[in-house]
Amino acid sequence: MPKPVLVFGYGNPSRGDDALGPLLVEYVQDHCDTDGIDVLIDFQLQIEHALDLEHRELVLFADASVACEAPFELNELEPALEIGYTTHALHPASVMAVYASINKQRPPPCFLLAVKGEAFELGESLSASAERHLRQAESFIEALLQNPRPAAWRSKKFQSRPLFDKIRT
Image (cartoon, rainbow, N blue to C red):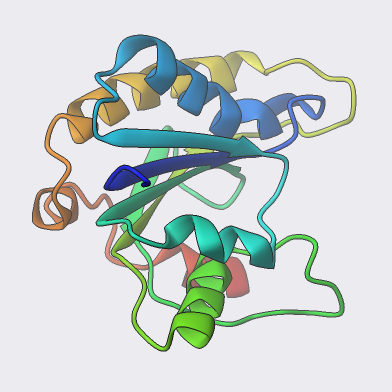
């Protein structure tokens, strides 16, 4: 049976700052109490990841972002299906929409912790600014996971404009 909270980091560790999501999840594995928390790392989100939301009470996606404000942003997500010509890389809001479609119910509350990245070239290492942002995000996620309740996380929201809207514009 899955644990009630899922922390899901995604990104390609071979593409510089794109490693921020997986590195943040590795921090959770090594430094946080994970008794009620499952962790998952993958290169990108796919429709199959909708199944990972089943039987969860709360989900935190962690990803690198060029669109967010530094050092990071936390936003609650709403399901929004945006599948282009391929379903190989989805936004977490689209994974939520797939969940809603196959289960005929709302997904659990989902949040996106977007950590500011700047350099995403193949073969690059993490940039100095991304390392600073990661350290700040590590402290934040550790505190966040000590109180895994949607209401508590909503009070820590860092901006009024959802990141998904920002990506579209």
